[in-house]
Image 1 (cartoon, rainbow, N blue to C red):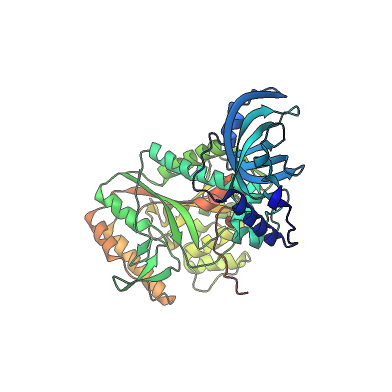
Image 2 (image 1 turned 90 degrees about the vertical axis):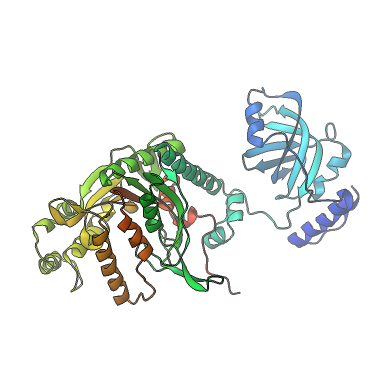
Length: 496
């Protein structure tokens, strides 16, 4: 076999480089620009699904993929493309010597193209009898072990390409993520929402309370911020009359902590629906979750980390004061003042700050005693106005607002309001929020006068919604960490 018999180095990477040199000498271009397959591996499997064992079709096909296993000195190889695998058989009775001379120079991880006849072996394996073998990409690094994958979590996240190459579960999860996002888009369009795009670079950051990422615009010569939310631009779109229903699947950036449920760069669905309220939005969320569960699993029942979760609507709906009363016996609706609320919380064993308001005490106890119990999808409604400055009041109870958060597996996955559209009240609350931010030391925080000018023009009553897409993907794909559903999560730069 000529050059292939040359003594090779004991270093794995160097061996591959030596084989690359041999291949260049033997075939010339080892990374050709043009190669056309006739079928993907999945299409091949579907087309020839009915072939009986020990039958050759006589059909000639061309496939391509990465070599994942090699047996009997390359006589049998499994090659994988993104859709699946096929077995390649190279034998002197069917494969020309020129093609067989390549076998010693092909390593696990190389990408090859194969032309040959389709058959099914006696054991039932769909196989191609190779007549031509084309080297398409020589891999210079060894593959991770296919069956055990990458056990080091840091390497899995830092070198995601290796994780997907060696882990079918990870590969499937990211394929499902793509399907979920396209499913969200299709669902929203079928609900007559118009997709829009709003700026990620903003001169004034707002729409949520979070620390922003700051940058500088060289041409405009001014500081700018990566958006923490698209809310204020989407509401301006609603003012414009472009559509009564708008949505954006958006990337947001919050310069804050990292955990199994938080990532500074994340994906959200945010939408606004004119002439609707938070109850209409609850129904929208339920229809969406049910639709996505069926699209991914074929059922509304799914397994998440040992728990069975049902995405079949309607979901449980409970006002926050009722949930806290059931869990602790404290009836916040019977408490009149901030002082009484703090005293009741302390009497029940909760440590609260000396300046907390009635609503802050209620929300804190909810987080401490109720959140962890919300395993099945649930809507928690009637939030305190103290912590929800941009939602409309509940009629007859001015301390509460028409807001809900959707929970599942004890996580918040959605947040929605009957949106405040009174321009004077909106300005008053935003000024108050700005003063609070400055008191906390957030000196970059500014009043969004362009948004307030748009609201003065008149925004219709509307329901608004934000859904954390990454957390939803976690639930639908049984992923324990948000970094398992983000292809390339940010990592601390290596210093060695």
